[in-house]
Length: 128
Image (cartoon, rainbow, N blue to C red; front, side, top):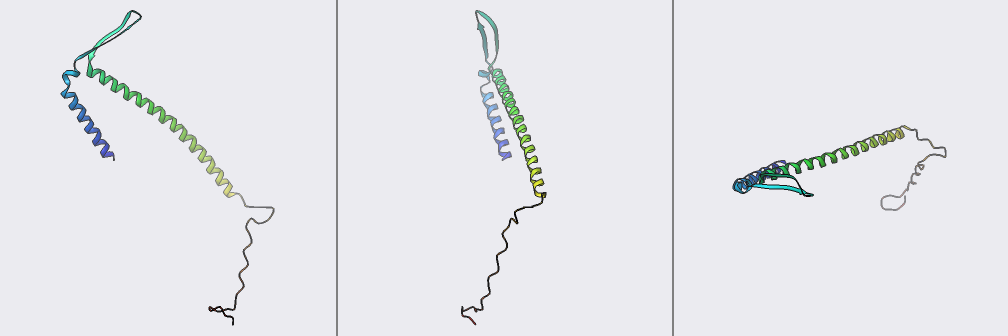
């Protein structure tokens, strides 16, 4: 399965590179972005389209990584709490196993059943 994922990622990479190579002229065309608010121009930038795509891809990867790291830390904390609870429950079970089984009212198990009386009958069901 690991090799299939690697192969799929490799194919995606080559497909993306071919797409960029065939559309280089359109992707290298400059794109103007400006932000005007309250009558003032805050910024005006002009970069190629592929640079915007690259920045958005990197930001998406970083935000995803941040989300998954926070989720991992949360799950690690939950796992540590569960391990601590398991450890304390195992100690409790072990301490209960070593306690002597004493009951003041009598034995806890039923006395063994009396053996069945022997019949003098043979295998045919007739007596001697």
